[in-house]
Length: 145
Figure 1 (cartoon, helix red, strand yellow):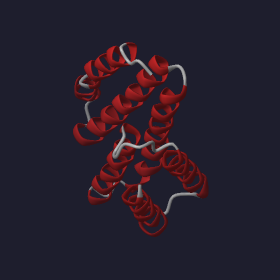
Figure 2 (figure 1 turned 180 degrees about the vertical axis):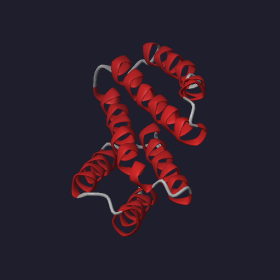
Figure 3 (figure 1 turned 60 degrees about the vertical axis):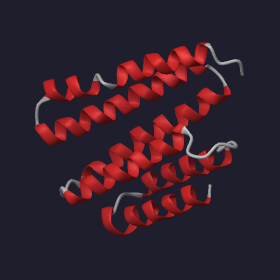
Figure 4 (figure 1 turned 135 degrees about the vertical axis):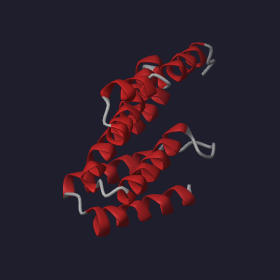
């Protein structure tokens, strides 16, 4: 939990000092991180925390490629995926898990479109997420909690 908080603080500094995004993005990110830390559970590196780490790595990649204007979109998309993963632990498991993996797939599609400039390649690469979502849905159905 401490490591997740340190990473979130470092990313918040990145957004303020380097990316220069607006205050709604700061507020949304602070809410997402706060909710994630409150509902962290007893396990280390739950799916929602790994999604935030994915956001941090994507932002560093965008920074290296001089594509900083895309950072707020990824904060909103992956922040929404993180909140959906948290909500899937509380209720409507299948719906929120599929929504979360769909948002992660959209993120992958946007990254591939930014990288290759082809919507077809972006869609094909994003299709990798669909088997993960289906596998996750089966695990939710067999979950005894």
